[in-house]
Image 1 (cartoon, one colour):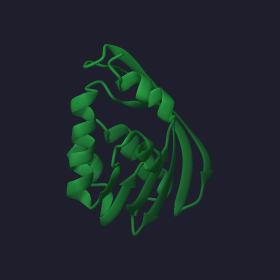
Image 2 (cartoon, rainbow, N blue to C red):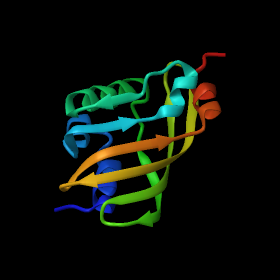
Image 3 (tube, rainbow, N blue to C red):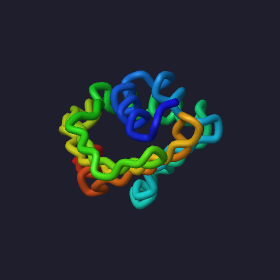
Image 4 (cartoon, rainbow, N blue to C red):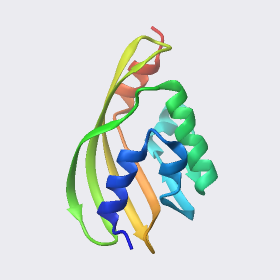
Length: 131
């Protein structure tokens, strides 16, 4: 059975394959980026199908999206907290999306029960705005 660190590592590596990434979540697992609400984006997905759709929609906007430079800061078998980066072109704006994510993952029975990510909303708004 995978622990929290193994699950987050697998998720970060699988992000370019929405089905594979979503399969790491429990049937009622949640992926949420609560700070995106300030940009008018509902970034809360519950269940593997919703999570797969959410990741696929992200990749449609940022085809080269991939995580790198993961730094695990707190690790227990059930929870992990890490920082990880993204640097990718947003084709619709021609801008580079540079972001540092902070993620807390809660594992349950070898699956992701919760992955809550925080990010710099100014950096996101800048990269995705046409002006």
